[in-house]
Image (cartoon, rainbow, N blue to C red; front, side, top):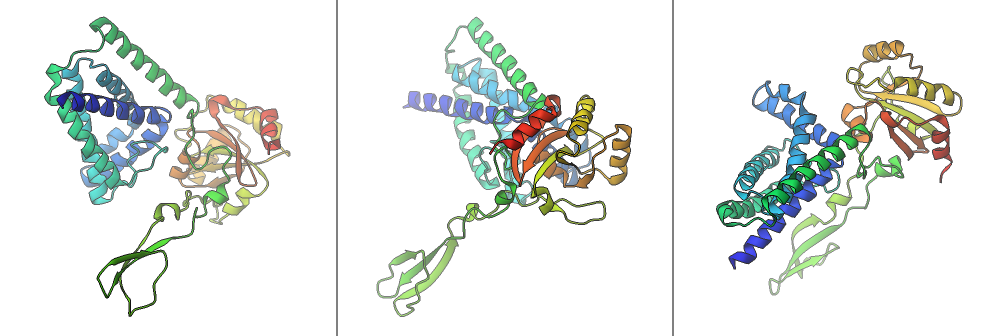
Length: 371
C-alpha cells in the first residue's frame, strides 16, 4: 500500500509543480504583476517595507517559477529527496498561507497559480494547496527511504540542464512575448465580444414535495404551491455569465470616454503603461514605424502615466502620436511589453509585438489584410 502512495505522491506532486511552473514560465511578466499585487496588499496590512520587494517582483517571481519546475523534476527522479522535500514543504506552506490569506480576507481574487491558463477562485487555490501539502508531507516523512532513479552524476546533469533551460525560456518570454497567449486580448479575439457575458444566467430551483418530502430540482420555477414547497435557488453558470473583459475603458486628457472609437476601423495601438519604466532601446524603430504608417493607419498611444509625464516623454523622444489614458493593470494585461505594439481591426486583435520585435510598416499592413 505504501508503495502505491509513494508513487502517486511523487508523480502527483512532481507533475503539478512542473505544470504550474511551465504555465508561469510562459509568462513571467504575469507573475510579476501578481507578486506586485501581493506586496501592495502586504504593505497595507503588515507594513510599508513590503513595497521594497515590489521593485524586485520580477526577480522574486522568476526564481519561484524556476524553482517550481526544477523541484517537480527533482521529485520525479527522487533527486536528493532530503533537501528537495524540505524546500517543497517550505514552498507549499508559503503558498498555502498566501492562498488562505487571499481567500479569507478576500484580498487577491486570483492567486495566479496557473497563470491565465486556468483561473481558480481563492478558496479553490487554498483547497489545491491543502491537498498538495498532504502528499508533500508524506514524501517529507519518508524522504530518507527513497532511492534516486538516476546515479548522482546523471541526476546533477538533469537538474543543471533543467535549470538552464528554464532560465533560457523565461528570459526569452520576458524579452519577447508569451509563447502561448491565454489572455482575453490575444490575437484573433474581438474585444467588444470579450466585454459581453458568454451566456445568459441559468438557474436551478430546489423544491420539496409536500406529500412525501422528496427533493425536486428544476430549471424552471414550479408554481404549483399545493404540491411543491420552494426551498432555494442557485445559479449554475455563474462563471460563464461574467464578461472576460470588464475594465477596459479609454479616456482623453479632458476625461471624455472614447472606448468605442478604439473598436472602429483600423487602429495601431502603442501601449506605454509607465513612461518612467518604458524601455527606449527600440524607440528609433517605433518612430520609423510611426513615420511610415502616417496617413495609412490611425495610431494611438495608451498610457497610465500622467499627461505631464507623457508630454515630457513624447517630446524627449519625438513620438508624434496622440495619447489616451487606460488603467495600468489593463494595459499590462493587453500586452506584456512596455512599450508594446498591437493592431486592431474593428475591435479584433490582428497582431501584437514586443518592442524588441517592432514590426515594419509592411508587416502591420499585411496583418490588417488578413480575415
